[in-house]
Structure formats: structure tokens, C-alpha cells
Length: 233
Image (cartoon, rainbow, N blue to C red):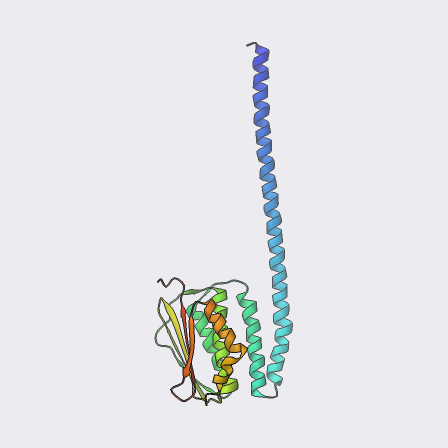
């Protein structure tokens, strides 16, 4: 092979290697550009969701709060208060921050005390020991809030009760919540309504079980059992 042929072969190899590097560099640049577009799109979507959340909380939330304070009857005020809490749930839980079971139960207890005190109903909250620090995804927490909230709504609006006893028990496998009122049993009639249907549906989404029985004090007892994540079979 002549020197010229050798030089041409070397030049051809160098050109081929250069083309390979250029193609790789171009592919990398395209991948980076696509990544930047995805990040920009995700950032814009997040910013828009946050704007919607703020508008809902500030505008609609303020209107609902005004209805709470100006309500002509305690029942009307409780309906507005429950709607306001539903709104806050949607705003906060939709952001996707995973909490814990004990945090969720503490919030449920706080809300129950406020609503029942406003309705003139005594709350007896029984919770022996500390709850396990089980993680609770936002969607599961939201279902749990809504189930207990609807049960309390039925007591306030239908039971003619003077007292509600709530018992909370949990271990690493399951959460059990028992709500017993001392009313006249009229909240039984609410089981046929959409609220009770919603409670059943949400319990199903939690792979749990919910039942209604006669209360020991003459009213109604709601028994809710929900498996906890990571509890095992």
C-alpha cells in the first residue's frame, strides 16, 4: 500500500469517527432540549394548578366562610363549614404530599370537635395509646376524611343526638373507627341517601369495610375498618 493510500485510509477513519461524535453530540443536544421542554411544561402546569388552588381557596373559601358566620340556622352553618373543609381538602391533598395516619386522625378529631361544639353536641373521643406512624397517601387520607365527615354530618343533621362517642384503634395492619350517637335513630334514614352511598364507595376504594348497627345508647353505630398500607396479609 502506497503512502497516499495509507493517508486516505487514515483520513477516512478520522472522518467516520468525527461523524459518529457529531451524531452523538446532536442526539445529546436533542435529548437535552426535549428534557428542557418537558421541565418547562411541567413547571407551567404546576404554576397553573397553584394559581387555581389559590383562587379556589381565596375566593370560594372566603365566600363559604362568610356563609358560616351569616348562616340563619346551625344546620345551614354546618353545611357551609363542611363544604369549606371539603374545599380545603381538595386544595391541600391534591398537592400530593404524603402524610401519616396519626396526623390525619388528629385533623379529623380537631374538625369533629369544632363541628359538634357548634351544633351543641358533646364529643367523647376515645383513642387508647399512640397510633402507628403509618404513611398515608393523599388520596387515601381524603377518602378517610370524607367518610368520617359524612358520618358526623348525619349525626348533626338527622340523629337529634346530644352526644357522639368516637373510638379509634389501630395497629400495623388496620385502622378501626367506631362512631356511636345517642340519638333517636333517625340518622338510619339517611343511609339511603347519596351521602351514605358515597361513604360505601370511598370505603371500597380503601379496600375497607363499613357497617351500621343499632347504637348501645339508642342511636346509631358506624363501624369503619380500613387496612393500612404495608400491613401485610
